[in-house]
Image (cartoon, rainbow, N blue to C red; front, side):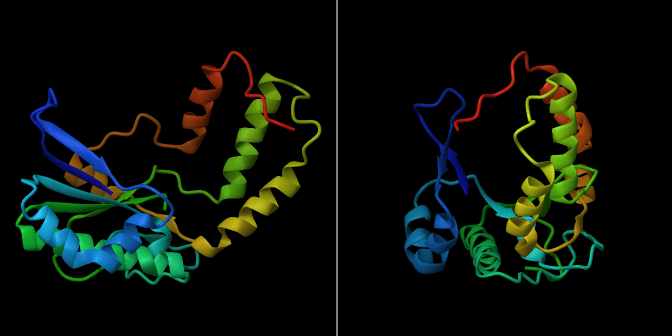
Length: 206
């Protein structure tokens, strides 16, 4: 969660406050909503932004989802985040300031136009992304990954991420309303750019 407010010590006139930690921002809003409201009411806030996750969509059977798709989280973490989204949006409304939710690729009802999916143009399952990254590394540094098995790594990652649900998330609203232009519309060009700028591979601890 990021909060922008005037700061006389900042050259830009604003200060950003971050509340970090696993689910800390979600639980903070759910448990201390009234305290936050009374505290921030006198904070001269200009804008509220909450970083959520596309995990709030739950399972969609691989179908495309956009910001108007009904949220249906299948995990406790997803339900916490969805509740936190509503809390921060309501707080912004109560304070009379702009509040936006950004779902990282990670509420719904009429008029909810301040939620944005932050993803690229090429949705793909984790194992596909990992396999592509593996190929890039192997091509640039042959034999570097010989002691690791891509199948085991991708299966493990897939199991860990399975609770996020199968879906293809659309970023159309982000690009249309915020004027965002992606440097790397696809994970392929993004990973290729990273590998091109690396002179030496990262060394992993045994």
